[in-house]
Image (tube, rainbow, N blue to C red):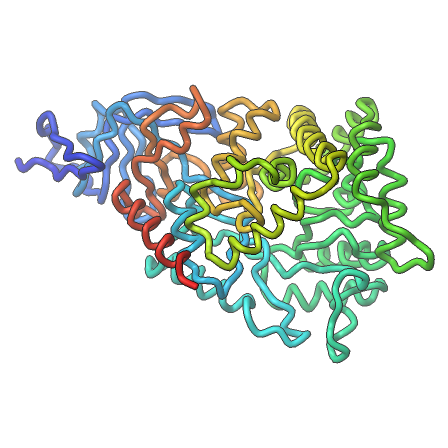
Length: 494
C-alpha cells in the first residue's frame, strides 16, 4: 500500500512510516495528524488527535491511533503543534476601492478567517459611487469561490447613520439620510434594509425620536442595529430596544459613571441642534468619566445589560492608539509596511495631532484606556459576551496584526486565555448565528490555524502561525509569507 503524501510546512517533514489503512477507508482531502486540538467552545484540549477534512468541512476529529478509517490525499504532521479555530475579527474596515490584498492578505496571514466588515456601503442616495455594497458583495463572492485569498466577509454593515449635526449632505440628498423625526427613522431603515447589509450601523448623534423609530422598524423587518450608542439612549436603553452590538470602549464607561447622565444629556442636546447647547470638552469628558466611576451603579447597569443579550466589541487597540500616540517605539511598528502609503501619511498626521495635546489630556487618554480595560473585565464578569474586534485600518490598527494585540488586551482586562480565544471564535460565531463556525468538530467549516506554541499557556502564541486553513484550503507558512510580500509591494506604491 502506498505511503500518503506529507505536506511540508517550513521544512520537509519525513513520515515515520505508513499507517495501516483499512481497504474500506473513507477518502478525504486532508488530515492534520497527531496535533493537540483546542476546542474553545467546550474548553476541551485533545492531545494526539487527527482532524480529517474534505472540501470545506471537517469530517472527523479522532485520536491519532484511530484514524485508519480515513485515507487522506495529503497529511500535515501536527506533532508538537496546536490547532485552534480560525480567528474572527468583528470590526474591520477594508475601505474599498482600496486594493483588497492590503487588508485581506494581512488578515489571512495572521490566522483571521472571517470578518465582520463595518463600513460596507456608501450613501448612493446622496450621490456616492465608490465603496458601495455591490463592491463588497463582489469581493465576498470572489473570496468564497477561491478567486481571491482572504477571510470570509461573514457580515456586511451599512454606512454610518448620523444625526444632521455630524453629516453634511448635498441639498438634493433625501432628508431621511440624517434622520430627525420618527418617520424619517423608519424610512431610513426600510431604505437600508433593501440594500442588503446585515447590520445598520449607528452613530451616537442620532436624535432620540429617530433612533426609537429606527429600532422599532428594524425589529419589525428582522434587521439589526449596532455600533456607536446614540447619546439619547445610553447602552442599557438601546439594548432594551433590541440593539445588537455595542462597539468601542466608550459607552459602557460613560454608563458606569455618575457623570454619564450629564454627559449624555449635553451631547444629545448638541446632536439634536438645541439652541445654545454646547458639547462637553474632551478633557472634562475623559477625567470625569473615570473619576466618577460608581461601582454599584456599574454593577447594576451591567447586570441588566447582560439580560438583554447585547454583545460588546471593545476594540481596545483604538483607545491604545490615543494613549500611546507619543510613544516612538509604538509608532515604529514594522507592520505598518503593509499599510498603503497614503493611509500611513494620514495615520502620521493623526498621531502627531494626538501627541501634541496638552499633557493633562494625554494623561487623561491613558487613564481612559486603562479604565476601559477594567470595564471590559467587569462586563465579562457580568455575563456580557465579549467579541474580539480591532477597527482595522483606523490609525495604527494594521489588519490582522492588531487582532493579536487586541487578544492580549482582553487578557489584561481579565479574561483567561481560553476566554480570549472564545472572544475571537465561538462568541462571534454565536453572534452571527453560525453553528458551522468557531469550533473544531465534524460538520464545522475547516477554518483552522496551526500554531507552533500553546495559546492557552500564553495568548501571545496566537502569533506563532505555522499554517492556516480557510474554507478547507491549506496555506503553509511559505504561502502566508508570500501573501504578506504581495501586500508590502502594493502598500509601497504611490
